Amino acid sequence: MITLLSDSGEKLATGTLRAGRADRTLEFDRIARGKGHLLQYFFGRGKRAVIVESGDFRLRGVLATRWLEQERLWQVALEQPRPVRTVVAATTDPRRRRQPRN
Image (cartoon, rainbow, N blue to C red; front, side):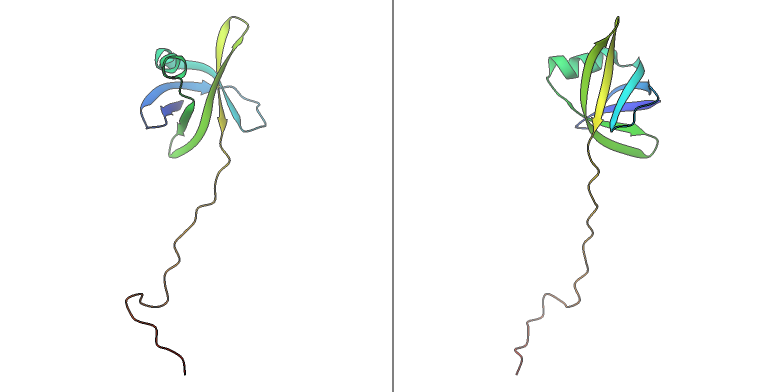
């Protein structure tokens, strides 16, 4: 099961994914819980930014929907992952004044 969260972390829905997409778009096969929350978030509040949660993984994406035959299909286009930047420790104490070179 995959959980969809709002951009602020509020749980919206849970569902299962369709298999077979090669791009960065997730398609939901079935929304098990929260269809009303998704509809309200998407249409009522006009929001699109979501977080996809599966186990310990969280990915940001943009929510979309369309009709497929007689049912609504929900999709999430995942954002490109950004590199994590780490702070490099300073080699000198910033409180010490620089000594002029002779």
